[in-house]
Image 1 (cartoon, rainbow, N blue to C red):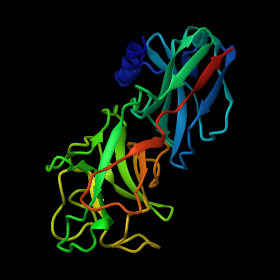
Image 2: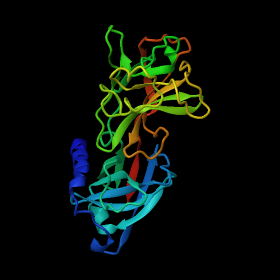
Image 3: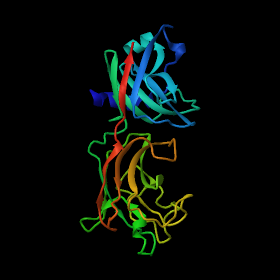
Image 4: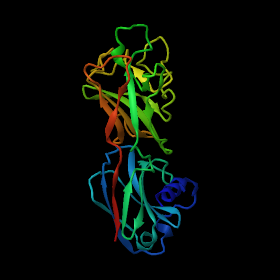
Length: 292
């Protein structure tokens, strides 16, 4: 049943003429829809959350919000709410001329009576079995004295480099992003959708050295053009390495709330040696939606 719900939700983008508004309502009587969600973060000025109910296979907006304090209650057309089968939450531009849900859907769940239990599993991805590893190395310069200043998501324990990340395929509207958190400052290693390939900034990074793009996996050398307050080259031992899941388009230059993998680099970590990651602080967002 959940698989059918997710497939239906992901297909909503094809209903270009199906999004209902108040002018389409057959009754002016409204009922309450109450959201009680856990794990959402504020999106900033350029984006908002928008709720949707699925009525006869089509999305009907239940309203937008920016605050992540819950519970929150919205007035929704009673007849539509009564027959709604599913609730979906999306991330939308704050100024939005498109009446349909954006591709970036973050929560979904089917109604069972008055209650819908919603979560990000499936509608974003399920990270229950996600694993990761990385090495410390700086392959993009000719200096072998600063190898602790780069992180690459690969596994070389067999003697040959293979992908270090076992991650599920994300749905449309999402990307992975690697991070090194130095003295509380997150610095991106780049975004990617396929962990077996180089990330999106492989050829455009301003941090790498001048000896090449590096191995064909996500990762980064922190060698030059350091952000304000940071010095490159650096020593990543003691820093936190994170893999987050980001909206695309992204709402912020900092990591999003979904962080399925994270690891503090050991103080005695050896360079060029595979290091296993652990479970991140947030791998699922969930909550409940009640109609009455």
